[in-house]
Image 1 (spheres, one colour):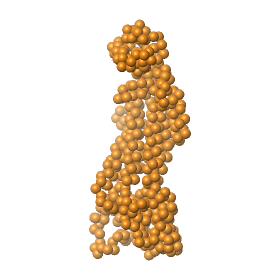
Image 2 (tube, helix red, strand yellow):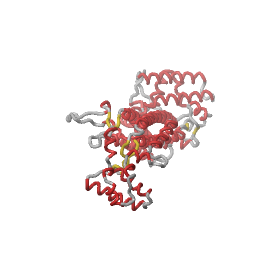
Image 3 (cartoon, helix red, strand yellow):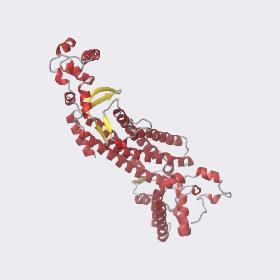
Image 4 (cartoon, one colour):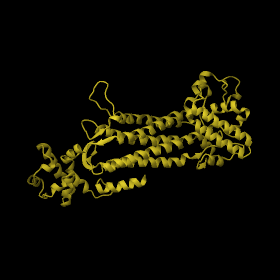
Length: 460
């Protein structure tokens, strides 16, 4: 294999490109990850060229066989790109020339690296969208399993990180199911915009050769072709949108991670994370740290950073293609890898967590979070809600001052707050009764959660 590196654009220049400038501008250390997509796109392009009579069938066969061999070499690590190669397109074309000679030069007929890299990027995005969608579906299945297991387990629901009302734990898990459902919907919607072929736009103005972009798109399983050649090579909206969707996925994961971190702490003690997904301290032997959840929470910042990076790169670019766009690959690749890996590992972490049901049962039975039930009890007795709220607030103050629980207050004392109280108040002051009494659609009642579970299973 020759060590001579030939840059694809150098024929117009009389002086060699400065090596420091080449090292600075080389992207092959990053875009080598696109070699599969580059070979797939080139194969489709060459097939179309032969079908349209732009190159011969024999040349097309030669090129495609060479591309397949190069793909195998790159896959096996036998062909190692170096920074002198500038980018993965140059690596592949130079290697093809070594294999088949001058015919390799025909691979680029009617094509620019501008529409080539735009095509590669969309093929990559399509693959990552599907991979992330599958990972999210796996996480949703785990959430459904947890919701089934803990449908009648009672936990605290929170607002402002303060205990608010008792709820079904199944209801809690299905809240996250719905967040990830929306994330999958966003990915599905994004795929419609991603799955459009830019191939045939050439540098930005199209080509004088009788190309057939629709055929190239068909061979690559795209849903359609570009409408405007300038937009085809200069658009990176789909990259930004993908990273934006990933940012929302990571935000949802981070919120979930925060719950697990808090709930597994000694102060809360609501759940146990398996030792297989926790770490210890190098100094303090008693520690059990929720490091996997913390890492997911931390990696969210990386994905957010990638979104800002992309928006900043694109905000001042004139039409059409600019070399700045080369910088879209690091944030895109890092975002895809980080998000898919985070979703997958978080799903495994979640599988290996268990609620501490006995502790939760004791805590929820004696807690002031049933105060809302008192207010609604009085409303059912025809007391205006604002008055019921004031009465209940005074009862809560009494409990705090006297160290009494709501079920521990005698009926005589309840009557000092309102004559509307009867002995049936005690039936309302049970967490199970509170949950079962919920009547509205999508509520935390056990029956409602059962309906939500069936809907979730159908969606999966």
